[in-house]
Amino acid sequence: MATTLTHHRNYIDGEWVVAASGETFDSTSPADGEHIGTFPRSGAEDVDRAVAAAKAAFDEWRLVPAPKRGEILFRFAQLLVEQKDALADLMTHEMGKVKAEAGGDVQEAIDMSYYMGGEGRRLFGQTTPSELRDKFQMSVRMPIGVIGAITPWNFPIAIPSWKIAPALVAGNTVVFKPATDTPALGQRFVELLVEAGVPKGVVNIVHGGGGAVGERLVRHPDVRVISLTGSRETGVKVLHAAADSLKHVHLELGGKNAVIVMEDADLDLAVDGIIWSAFGTSGQRCTAASRVIAHESVYDALASRLVARAESLRLGVGWDDATDVGPVINRAALEKIHSYTQIGIDEGATLLTGGEIATEGDLAKGFYYRPTIFGDVDPQMRIAQEEIFGPVLSLIRARDEADAIRISNGVRYGLSSSIFTRDVNRAFRAMRDLEAGITYINAGTIGAEVHLPFGGVKETGNGHREAGQAALDVFTEWKSVYVDYSGMLQRAQIDT
Image (cartoon, rainbow, N blue to C red):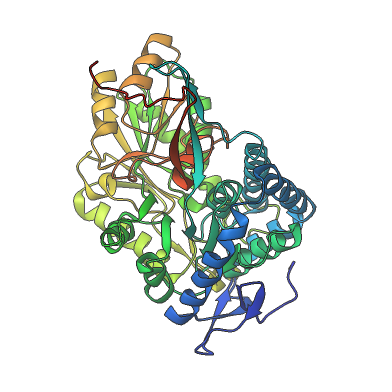
């Protein structure tokens, strides 16, 4: 495995330090139980120290010219390129992704860091003509202050880059809490930022649980922005906790994404897209396809092909080139996923394949769930409404295009959506009518590019976006500036 260290520390104000309590926790591999490392079990005192360091560092960091801040992100991206194989290898062990997906996770961080590095020479505002003579006006982006970045385990290198890179290039400082399931990857992320030249105090990492570290970060009066990727339930708690101090809160939450397959679709292409979207990352993506809405004329043929493909997928450790589907992240996730199989059966859905915890041979050492497909699913069943976050797919019949759109929109979430059709008019209607932040035409529901906004509608979040220019709106405040060079008092919006 890529890392040789086993005992890790928090990084606060340019120093590697243990938790104030002296307590620790272990990170182990979901693939085979391997010990990855030991990390500080931090608490409020550690968060307070990190926030104080970030607040102090903000005064100087905000004055570093933005192009110089961008150059540090370029160096960081180059280090990620150099360390890509090692980081991907560590990810197969600590998080469980298969090799190709782990490399893709790191590549997203590379792309995001290069992109946001370029924003150091842009950070565009606007100039507009004034309604008065001899007056100039413009808007500029201003950094906000200390950012609290709380990231999940399923994209342990990519998602930190989505939050930390735009925050840094805009002139903010950061306190970073990685997921307790993937702390080693969060640690390496910060180590490389430090190597790239980020000054002390500008980025701080505090390991520990959501109750002790996350909640204090959210409630701390000197943290001005919280950016969280997590569950809907956690997002609601964060909003409540942040309300008293009127913090800016950016939430990227759940999904219950659907792939629509119309009667004119290329079924071979649709099967490829569905299998990748449903079972890539063992279904542990907020953009994973957990519903397939198939026109009734192609439902049976599509179901047969999907079952055959799902049953051909090989479960195993992520570092084995022959593995198609790795483990789920931990035992609690495994048990939750399996509970939904029973829920689906009890609701009257037909279990077409899977529905089992895999325990044969070496699979018994980890947390493996067989790719699962339910047929004859009613759109209102729990398995068609609730986020399972595992390799479970529900097949739903639709009468026509309008019925398919209605079913797709009939959930509380609105992150990603997809339709397979050869009809360009139908495709454009879907782009207009699907209630989602992302819509794919003739592709699955997963995969995004860093220069477009990423995020969803309805209960998938609170309207903000990651990636692209839109990410800068999370981490900057707009300031309007008026320069009157007339030499006299001119009053706008006053009748004369």
